[in-house]
Image (cartoon, rainbow, N blue to C red):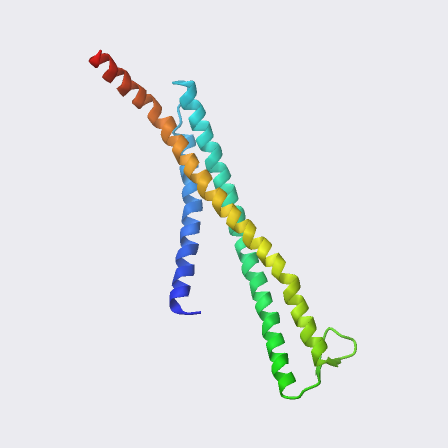
Length: 174
């Protein structure tokens, strides 16, 4: 892996942890500073904001939990592919059989060993694709519920002052 990729991955990881922490921090602060009773609409916006931030945080945590699993599955695929490539090199060098630990025969034809490696890769690819698909969905849910949570908190906290300003502007102009 080149240096730019490593930097990119580190920054992405930091950003993901930051957003998760920010989500729960905003949720906690909004709960601590909430005041209810001024308006049913404002109270509803506040509660919806909390709900969306809570969902965002939980989905984000779930996504973070599954990212290492995705990397692990990809590493396993690479290991099987590397082993198959190594066996193909042996095959090109004229080797007909190789020792295998997982087989009671001890030594198997090289074609059979290559086929076993390729079968493992074929078996793991759908698992990796499924994990990637779900982590992308979770990212989308996490991002949009975070945005909705912020919007609803803004609406909740700004509803009273905005209504007050609007009533004064329209009363003065009338």
